Amino acid sequence: MAVAMTEKLETVYQQIKARNPGEDEFHQAVREVLESLGPVLVKHPEFVEQKIIERVSEPERQIIFRVPWQDDKGEIHINRGFRVQFNSALGVYKGGLRFHPSVYLGIIKFLGFEQVFKNALTGMPIGGGKGGSDFDPKGKSDGEVMRFCQSFMTELYRHLGEYTDVPAGDIGVGGRELGYMFGQYKRITNRYESTVLTGKGVAWGGSLVRTEATGYGAVFFVREMLAARKDALEGKTCIVSGSGNVALYTIEKLQQLGAKVIACSDSNGVIVHEKGIDLPLLKQIKEVERRRISEYAARHEDAKYLPGGDVWDIPCQIAMPSATQNELTGKDARTLVKNGCIAVGEGANMPTTPEGVKVFLEAKIAYGPGKAANAGGVATSALEMQQNSSRDSWSFEHTERRLDSIMTNIHASTWETAEEYGAPGNYVLGANIAGFVRVAKAMLALGCI
Ligand code: GLU
Image (cartoon, rainbow, N blue to C red):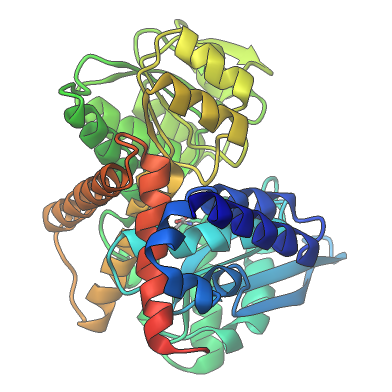
């Protein structure tokens, strides 16, 4: 029976691949989930009869639009905007916007697909979606970023709404970009509809802890994985890839919980600081000055800068991939395991290649996939929506406690699901199955829509 189901899943996967040509990242994300689902279909034949897998892999709606804007010299540029409204069985479409030159439909669909199951794992009433543009905010003036964001929102606004679709940030989209987009939405609609975007500035409807949430949440997840193995973060040597929002607040929480972070990176190179990363300096360079991390080594005499270096070559006990998809390969995974790494918590979306995932699972280290480990960002977005809807704002402590308990629950449910399906400690299986079953049950209940 189980074998037949695996064949069935292979056939479905091949159909999805053929139907979405050239979208490699989307194929990878679908394959990874489908590989976990064999035993679920044996237990729930109704999911097969009702074609839940075929339906869940087809976005409900995909919007692609032109984004024209003028740079400071008056020259016109044309970018492409996307919003993929993937699944609304559990709630409004929810997920970030990514501005990065690598963005194309396949990236947005992989992110949207992952988001559906991630959001389900939070236990909150949010469906999944994702969007963005191939616009590169790097090196652009504030005025250029504002004009781009206004043009982007001038098209996107008609597809959004508190009860329809609620975007947030992702790579290249932070408080500045969300501010410009919220301003334009408000102007066009003549509504102060706070709940239409999350990750807003605290002064204009944002939630405390949202900035920190993805990084903090990933660290809480790692803390739980270690606790399940009767271990703790205190005194552990860690490396964090990236130096954006997720990486900075991963470093902050690791340090608060007594771990030592000795390296981080950007797309140009790696900094290694054996005494431990000086976070206030790193934040100043990245958040205030918006510069590259090579600047950190220039201002800190005991730090080393490795141009073009691979952060995964630095020996550590805990690795937290917090940059982007497929940044950690099979070779990197083997290096980490060989160097004594005992836990990996993914703050980024799908940062480990399928070969790398296999290495971690075979080595039986504590491996927390992004879907589970980085769900704290979107979960706190849902908390921001709750505060906006009730015209309330919660304290930092209260919001962080809520985030902590959501992450602790995600750990417990992925752990228990893995045990239930005979794969103790396999959070990949646990996350895929727990997320999928929640969405699939809701889809069944809502009928063939
Ligand atoms: N972009 C984040 C993610 O990958 C957050 C999405 C949100 O807050 O809606 O989950």
